[in-house]
Amino acid sequence: MKFEEFKKIIPLIQEFSLEKLDSHQKMEPEFRRKLLKNPRDYSDITPKKAAVLMLVFPKNEEAHIVLIVRKKSPDVHSSQMAFPGGKHEEADDNYDETALRETFEEIGVHQYRVHLVRQFSEVYIPVSNFLVYPFLGIAKIEPAFSICPDEVESIVEIPLKMVLDNQYLTTVRIDTSYAQEVDVPAFKFGPYVVWGATAMMLRELKDTIEDLIP
Image (cartoon, rainbow, N blue to C red):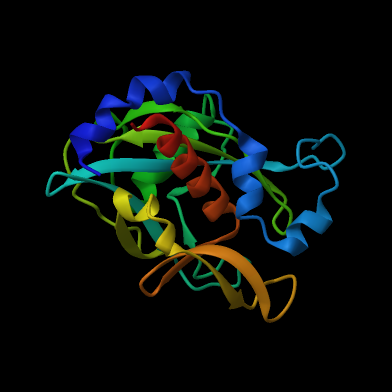
């Protein structure tokens, strides 16, 4: 998908009525579904809050989206594919500020380079008790990424046309913090597997774009 083509549908994305549960459930692992009787009710959970940025940018005239590979660590999300982002801090005025601050800290893209388009549907992550708010943003020029080596192993730039291509949707067998050798729906871009909360967010973006392009 050309970046200029993507820019043309931004006003439509801003007005689009999101279908959170439908898109998310397409990529929801079965074990997660069993844990959450009502995925919209967090009243008895008191989750921690976080925000991430789904950053679209031009590269060789094509629209790309950036993902990170998290650093290997004792954390439950160690080595997983994710959007740049992190925990909401008291100093952050709102969740979009959290997404922009964390993106700068993790991959070096300053907030003045990013135009925020809109917030997408939040995702609750049971294993870490985080409620994550994703934001779609665009950079008008290709960013000069600079990773934080303490948090990020590497950056992966995915052409948006691959996200929109159903051939990259699959099911993979993985080990998780919940269970060993479980099948989960995923995006698979070469050696990179995107599953769980990040896949749910990415699927909502994919479905939204597909509903809007001619």
